[in-house]
Length: 151
Image (cartoon, rainbow, N blue to C red; front, side):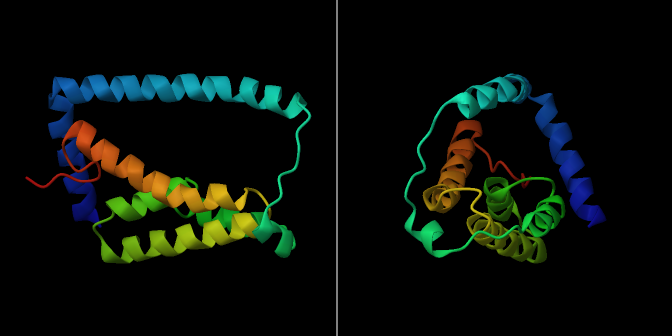
């Protein structure tokens, strides 16, 4: 595990020497900051609107249960992220044990958020192909493997 962190540190040092990578990193951090600042206002706005409950065949069959504690444990034991990020971690992982863990955690989170009725089925099902599309797009945009660099 120590070797993994050593390689990661080395890769970051190499990447930070490249001006185009620093530019993309700055833009990415800036955009994430803007999104995070806007989130509370966005959620306040949509919570005030009258909405309609959509019909979801899977959620109609599965009774809701509070599985918050289990979801919390899986998320916080998986580098603090949700389903999409877990699946991205799976795609990026070169360590077989961690790859297996992140795939199982992704599937469990998908099932648990359906059981708790946190997301619609279509949201959960499309998280996987959306994450894969993000993975492929980032690979093409930065022209390297976004997860690890082999020199």
